[in-house]
Image (tube, rainbow, N blue to C red; front, side):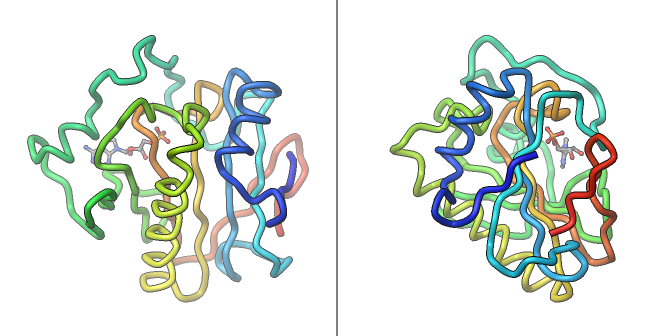
Length: 188
Ligand code: AMP
């Protein structure tokens, strides 16, 4: 795992550097917040991990050839499939995850997919949107999980991404377990 402090705190750059070059088969970006999120260093930072099938993955699903292919999340945004809204504005939709991993588990997505099937696909012109999704998820976390939460993004097969419409998970509402990769704790 690698750790990116704010000087390099750019989701677009991190995804480009690691996703496309170092972990082409998939990676996870993770941000721990507060006690329940296992944060120990209070200087905002991103963890990036990959290079193997990561823990807590469900089904392993290969990315589609066409990044604009519709997914279940397009149907959710269109209202064709029901969801429980937790946040909505012009560009971002947040809803309850159907299979929660913690007391609170919300998913935040761009309403317009625009090629954003995976984090690594983000272009420089989408940097602001990425930041906005992240902040929407963090504000929701602060409100619902004042003792801490974790935000993570699965990108690709090795990370267990199953829905190829970029999304950020917000989990919290209880003491979360440490994330372990190769026996090493990711605890800060
Ligand atoms: P990922 O594994 O990162 O692709 O995450 C996809 C997430 O979407 C999983 O946590 C699923 O439980 C969740 N999910 C799939 N279908 C639905 C649905 N219809 N409503 C809410 N969440 C869903």
